Length: 281
Image (cartoon, rainbow, N blue to C red; front, top):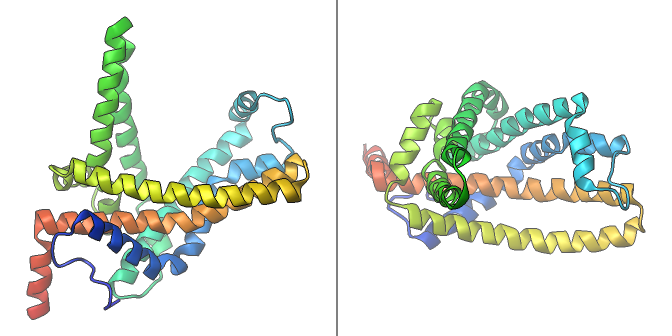
């Protein structure tokens, strides 16, 4: 990976962070596709089971009622939970493989490392979800205009918190840190970079949305032509497209996370200085 400057030797501009993201994606995507596809399949376990059991939304049937019926089915609940855990593991393996490719170029052992970090990842997720829920607690005990104001304040706080903890999972995996340590370090690294990081994430999301829209439009056309009104076939075709899209997009998320974290380390922790010292030693 000598042609890819990672970590960067200086702080990067917004465009340079996005450029580094695409370069990491191109260098690592192919080798991560298997884990990425397995992660998406795990995420779709319950939906795949529903299709196999013929539990698709029939014409004229309320989709929300169908979804509610699935959530009270013990087998569906178990599949959702198993799928969630497997998704976390495979997505973590993707990011760990990308980091290893950027390091010494070797691959192997990422899945075992992801399983080893699973309890910490789950703990991190619980802390983040609990923090998000706590933002809305004041609104639950009030009413009227005050509740509306508190909900608005909670949404603003969540936007800031999302950016502040956006590097926590990457830190936990790459630096083998604990959940609380990862959150604190992410908060410190992102301090003062809210608008800059918001712009980076927004541009990245727009790019992915455009990609999704184009592929989804093509897939929708093909599903309508090939499915010929067969709900089961159209649903199955949609699931296949979702797996393909997810497999292609997952390494991009990892590449963006690695690029952002590397840039923040250079800005806040002098990673570029350490790199230069080690290179001249």
